Image (cartoon, rainbow, N blue to C red; front, side):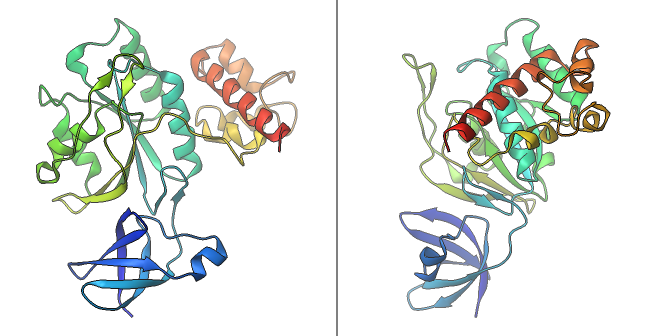
Length: 292
């Protein structure tokens, strides 16, 4: 039985690349019974039928898995965010980061449209915060051909997911890195202040260096559905090592006395903005759990 990787999912079909050929496959009904669907990035075994079509029979165990966007086996998350149009939203960046950490992916941040100019001092402060935590940051401009070579090097040899809200320039970046794909790009909605969706499906795009980039539909909201309040702090790298120093086991770093994380905020070892976002996420998780 041939084996291949799902590189695109569209309208109920899974496009499997195997031996240099692309097979248009359906999934067997057994996956619906198990409530376990194939994802882009999955290694699968499939039956060949005719005319380049087939049926997926089994899925190899996944190394990583994202629910939204639905992607399997990616090892790197590229958090793409523009400095203007739409404007900087650190809360959204941190939300993408904690979801990438939870999925076991290595994240880094790409700021786009730097030719438009960020608010004075704000971008520099954010870069200092994220690089201080250990997250690499790349500054890019498709217009000025800036940062693209560095970004390409960081994508080499990885399966990378591009994550970010609509209008941040993900498709423009991919067009610059892989000109032959000619992805459709969209304008910014003046009324809403954000980009219109230009990517309609999940697809893996192959880099000439051997890596893969997963282009996903733009989105701006990630859910904390299914998360436990106690796990959130483990996905903030600057907070996680401090948990053992808190007075109480299972400390949520909120109202508890003698909390090492709150002490680190006071001494500016943990940045106040990151801690503020942590508390917002914590509240969101607790509210969701309350209504389950």
